[in-house]
Image 1 (cartoon, one colour):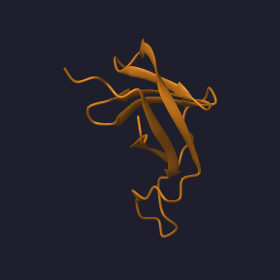
Image 2 (cartoon, rainbow, N blue to C red):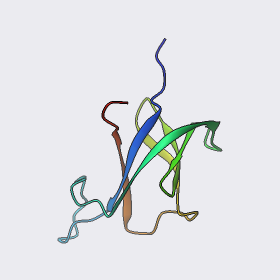
Image 3 (cartoon, helix red, strand yellow):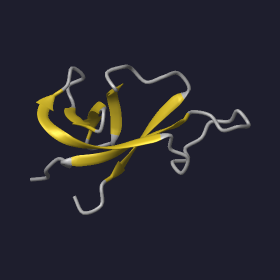
Length: 89
């Protein structure tokens, strides 16, 4: 039986590079947070993770963020979110 990850690192990155092209770069993260499983299911139906001012519903199979609050607010326009595994977890 496969268990769900207990934590992830969430990275907030600019959605577009300086040249206006889309980016998947995580090196220029504007903010990051380690979020841990709360044991709850979010309104999206996926497990809820929280920590460091971020609360997210994450599909653990695809690492897709289905819902995200940053300091209690929705993600600002022009920002994108990436998910990374936490080493040693």
